[in-house]
Length: 164
Image 1 (cartoon, helix red, strand yellow):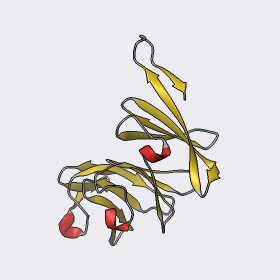
Image 2 (image 1 turned 135 degrees about the vertical axis):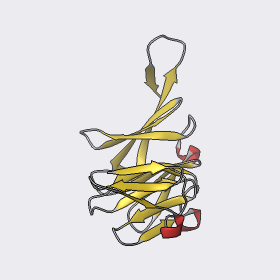
Image 3 (image 1 turned 180 degrees about the vertical axis):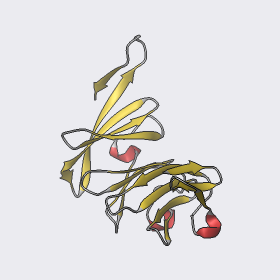
Image 4 (image 1 turned 120 degrees about the horizontal axis):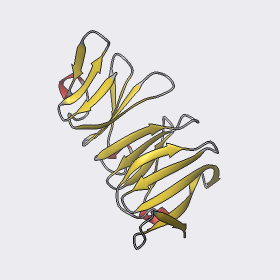
């Protein structure tokens, strides 16, 4: 079991904790998210970029490598093996080689996206404080996911989202 902390990451093996920090290769000690990919590599979203741990070494990614921002809040792997990162400046999709950025120029609005969920149809839902978007990974334009945006109506008691 892995735990994100403001002092690095901790792994509990059922008997003891092992702590990892920037001294061990983590890109930044302020960790916000943890995800395990299909190759059993651990991904950590931090306030200094993203770290991938293969069980022995850390590989770090920052804005210089293509992240929209070094402030990364969430990490998620979809069923096709893409890694998704929610950053201060947009969403990144990573195929293992290239980062693609989705941001307000692609139609993402509503603040910082902090939630990912993949539904049974393969749509990736992206949630922010005042917006919701669905990334349709199978219908790409120019290699980019097609986005469908939804707007929240705050004037009603029920949470209602309309497509726009």
